[in-house]
Length: 181
Image (cartoon, rainbow, N blue to C red; front, top):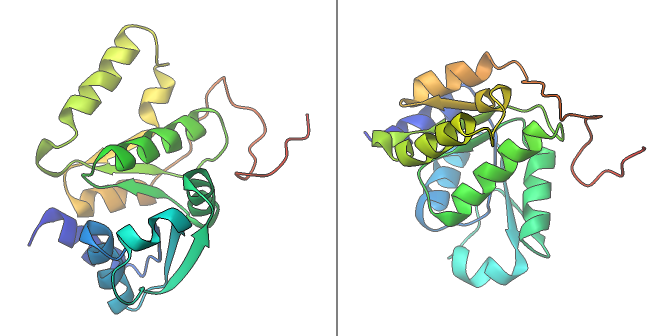
């Protein structure tokens, strides 16, 4: 069994619902089917422009169609209790970095996890360390990301999560909520 599959089993065993990018192909499709078939709720959020590319056949669970990528991320953030990145491409990395950034800025206090399957993210993690070393990333912000090599370890660490508070933070708001300054 792959580490990715064991993550889904951890999710189903703990009855953790899924909010994800809405696709039914590739890893997104595997995630949604496994979690849905395990009896958990599934909410897919997908931009209208990606419908033909990322959905094949019947959608799994509830699907919310949005206008674009920014709205997709805002909707996912609004409905999620935590964020987890599995190995992926540019889109996955961009979403991961945005959730880390939002945490640093105090926009959310939700755990942000990274399943580092077979060291996939080692180079990215080294870049983060270099950013701290060079003074571009605050030492306190380097603790936002919860990293594990196994699904069981990641879920446990995320369950034990305590928000990291940074000096940059202001009033915590929901994504899309107007700020009262």
